[in-house]
Image 1 (cartoon, rainbow, N blue to C red):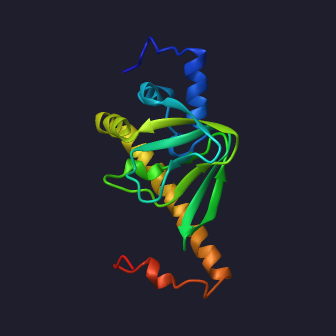
Image 2 (cartoon, helix red, strand yellow):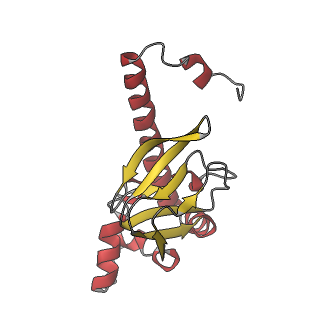
Image 3 (cartoon, one colour):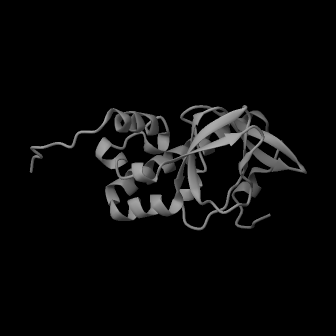
Length: 175
């Protein structure tokens, strides 16, 4: 069946769709699909050295950097090791799409301020439960993101053999 009257979107909505698609998690969602998320995208301003979330915190939202810089840091022996730096369009906290997860790293604002879009987990779950096609696309993108992480991990491991015991990554124990 053809839709004779296609929904039209405001320029602001079109900009938001385009911005959300910068994040790999949402890159292949159509406008009609992204529209379901828009009511739940909240903008929040953070300031230098403000922590967005700590390692171990419950994963209650996904974040996308609108402006500013956010550093993702791993807690190592009472210090922080930088994992990566995110700028406009950078998405973090994506494990919030999984049930009952906690943060695996700490995120900290590194510029004077940062405007960050926040999408609460409860709302993402609601959209995904109501729209199976959206859920399938997001989960496929999520799987691709984590496949890329594992591929990079193995590449680095091959060049620094002996730096850590890869067996501990794939064991059933929690260390």
